Image (cartoon, rainbow, N blue to C red; front, top):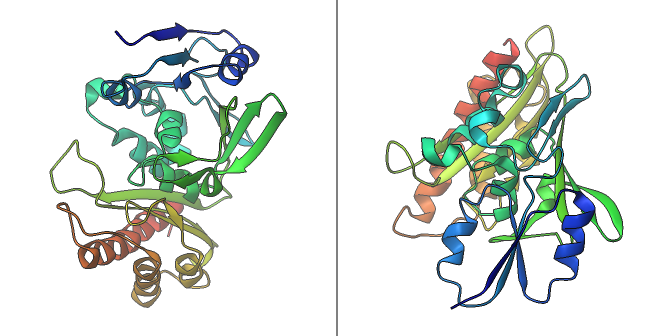
Length: 287
């Protein structure tokens, strides 16, 4: 029988100590919806470090500066927060798409981020909102932009003994909003064939003065697409600008062909999603 050691520290320091000094493979339990499935096929000793008892890991605090999101806050609680939804509707949309109602009670934005799947829904939405990852380790604390956090398929920048302790999302500028869309083969509970998160800022005349465009499930990591954002900035998000943004997203994508979609199909769909998400974000921003 494979030995699994379970620990539930009550401080960030305690969790870091366990992770840094583990002599077997150590995994963090945030929500556990991915980890539990992954462990079913593992035949080696494991240390599971449950971080949900650490103060702040299950909380979300909204202030004038922005949102401080605990990585372990269940998506069911996160998506029920009307105050957060009013400011970050696209991010809430993305979090709501993770799994079924039962899964929503356990899964978390932080877990979705750390699992680092190319098709993770919240990662493009976090990128569109300029989210930052606060990482603690024995060497202290460091902050990494979400677009630099994920480094490959199920891989991220955290080293042994490090813990994602907070997701910090700045408050959007006035007349700014976001949207997230994905395409799936089924009507629900599937992973994205392509996804797009877009944030836009408008001036009083309806001209886009700032934008962020991120795409998912079309490369080994979610991608920030500055060329797509540049196509929107300076425009009133007319069809020409939207098409240019969609074309830029399609060009930046590097998908594969599998049973869920071809390279050509994914490139086309991600461009369509960027155009549609930009329209929704602009409408929410007041355009």
